[in-house]
Image (tube, rainbow, N blue to C red):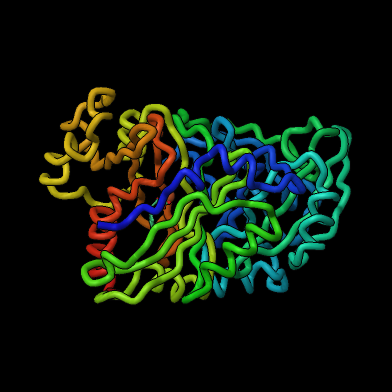
Length: 386
Ligand code: TYF
Ligand code: FE
């Protein structure tokens, strides 16, 4: 069994005490994907995941070199961007990485201060503080690099009441599939190279004032399952959680290594999205063609009462229904959680999504890792990458 290292020291209360306040974060602002065909990606995210049209920028709005579609569902905003010309630098990104996440944007009170505070602590600049304006007000954005070619953009929008950002026009569409109950981004996970995890843990600690509140050790599982190590970084108010994975030596090729090979280096591996009715959400996603990893064996579901222990009484979901949908359940000292993972959402085995419903639990489903990794390995086997 994978060990979940957790002590009082890493409890949420200590996060408030231990975290620095030089970079107060209000939440995730948006996630921007670079994709080969933004128009078709937008259709996929609307049709399959139930996102709503929000904003657009492109030729029709005076942008000559790229097109961006902005979609929204509850608190989540995603931007799908594609290059329009051969000399756009986005082509380089696409050639190397394929479709993937370029920007994890963070909502801040002061984008200039966020930039200055992180830069003086050793961040690498992506974008100096820049004022953008239109008839709806003013937005200031700045940005720094994190692992690989991924960036964090700080967004200050307190003087803005437009639909997204200056330069975008509202996108009203006649095609509006029903939402699927996706609420907000729970966490975004990065894969980094061999022995690089602690470098990036230190980056989030020193440069961004985050703390490491959970660690997952690979030791006990390396001999049987494709191995990895993981540390969860959180900001001070616990709203932003960035786990970081690195591959570990195992009997089989690590799923993290497979990602690094196909993504051409470090990048965002999965985005976990919260719902408060996972049975309804997953039923709808399945009906709309979203593909999920295969279910754990029946014995996994038989063992749920044992795995949930004291939290079993609290569980209101029907185990048969959960098994039918291939949803997994785990518990920690604070409660339980339900989670499921999509297959990669592009042809390269890189980015995928997690759907998560937290019923008090603050962990990441360590009790499911074995079943999850076996399921991922069945996919790797089919791809011949194990
Ligand atoms: O975010 C997490 O830690 C969980 C579990 O390759 C996980 O969702 C860990 C590693 C991985 C996939 C999922
Ligand atoms: Fe996750």
